[in-house]
Length: 247
Ligand SMILES: C[S@@+](CC[C@H](N)C(=O)[O-])C[C@H]1O[C@@H](n2cnc3c(N)ncnc32)[C@H](O)[C@@H]1O
Image 1 (cartoon, rainbow, N blue to C red):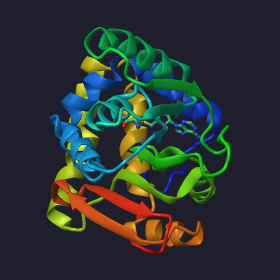
Image 2: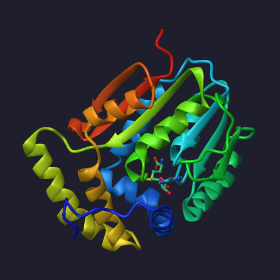
Image 3: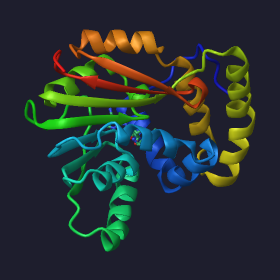
């Protein structure tokens, strides 16, 4: 078990290999480990965008495509939805899910690309909406990534960030810490092929910047208005961020 002070290696090779090894059981583990509550947080984020006219969406660190599919299926405009990740394993599950879902939802406009989100292969101001769901804490330089997302977002565009965090309430914090340090490794040993990765998971949450530091990073990367929503007893934060100052 890592200690909170031990620095995590977030180099592209380490992170992409780790997620590739998790990929086949990633969605199952997400449901089991969170008791399906991660679905509530994703649905909450999608509702913030409903009824908006959106043509192009970028889902960063898209993993197995959970949020890309949810977003595309719930927006009436069927926007071009691009999921972007650098883990081959996660992308191959996304492609597999796309094949299966295509039987049910024909003509949906979704595509996945292999790219490091620190260097996005898109022109300036290409997307109305960008989203990064449970991804920001895994990148080496979140400030750089936020600047890069700012670059590819339209002047009237939005950014949605969903991220896990340590709850402020000490009792809930202790309970969650016990759950992740004692119970989750047992669940991972049954359901996942990479137990160490779930050790990484909680340490990455423990070490990730607080909401006030995240707000500071957003300011430094020139984002303007931010509304944040604290969910699941303070263990998840959804940030709805706008590029423009004006409403
Ligand atoms: C915890 S998963 C989240 C996946 C997905 N967004 C979800 O909600 O299930 C984090 C993902 O971030 C990806 N990732 C981390 N750093 C990245 C980077 N610099 N470029 C591209 N993908 C990255 C990993 O490969 C992994 O698929």
